Length: 254
Image (tube, rainbow, N blue to C red):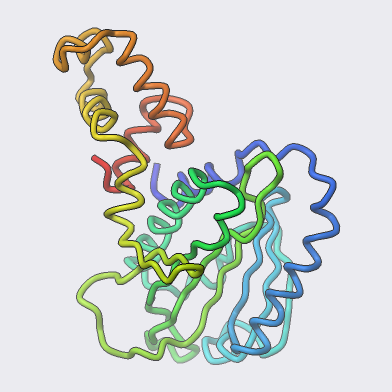
């Protein structure tokens, strides 16, 4: 399963439940997305993960990329803006999805009150209406959660990048906009989701070791190993060890 499919599964298979505040508050976030498109000339995509729909508001960037007319809007029956994705360089699209998966795992481990403080910023290559690649600044926020903790609304913004220099590698970052903290997604916050012992256990699980074999290798009880396994599943928000290994690899934990 590729990164995009894993992310799609994680986003849409959350347990949303019923939240009486949602029907009223989505209008507020639609207005926020529209303002971004007007003020920044962004393409602003508000994705409703519960209903699998997106609301797209097109600023001047959309016209230059040959996607849509300026100040137009549309609703699509998907959380994925495929017309936009088709314009993104394949390598950058893969890196974008991988970074979004890391942000998902990070914010799910945080209290609801802190989640909207974190967002992605990255520079990607997109084809303009002439077929030439130009640099676009992409930002992505999980801006609203359900009361049960599931992520409900995501906002993606696409603007022309000010920095035109060619990066040696994909330069995406996770940023805490409340503190100014810049997080390298391959280190620190993401790396600290699992303890060192949990990483040791997961390494051995990936090698096909059973709980008893892991306990013998690490000289700890099988009950402790089972507790570590459960903690790993809870922290990575997965249902089994196969998913845990796959997610941990994408997050650079293995």
